[in-house]
Length: 223
Ligand code: CDP
Image: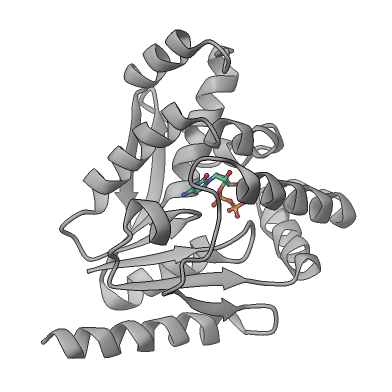
């Protein structure tokens, strides 16, 4: 069973996907983390995004691996754990530009389908219900007010030992949403058959349980 969770930046998709997966014994896949890892590699290797052949050979030789350590996703790049580094501000600032490239999307979508197909998996991102798994068993679209998202992102960064001004974070989040929604290839958009979850005033456990209950209803129908 594939469950798609899409939505703009910092709406709580990753933490929700992880908690829902844990409750149901499903796998989860954070596709944003994959785009962040590619972006980190682009920055580290100083890859030109305008040179098609350079980019394609970079993508062919990309050594990106996903592991689950005690049910938590670990991202490895060139055999090094980059799970924390992909959240660096330089990566966040560049990720929308890298993710908009058709060659990057093609490689990542193929990889995502390979990782999740045939499994019980919660897959979260921007284009899961529209492009990666258009036939997902259930689709959710998470939204929240920008100011609340900025507050949540500030807390996330503080746990990583980083401090950032809240208004700066809100501007960044809005910019990223604009870039992600207006790009030509696989833009962030809500598919018609997805269920909207507005997390602005929901407590984390409420939103997790809401999704879990809807999945359980579908599961019952399948048995
Ligand atoms: O966690 P946060 O909301 O900051 O974003 P993320 O899920 O880590 O995704 C980072 C970026 O990757 C997004 O802003 C998109 O540019 C890109 N992305 C994408 O293009 N397609 C996906 N399926 C997932 C992420």
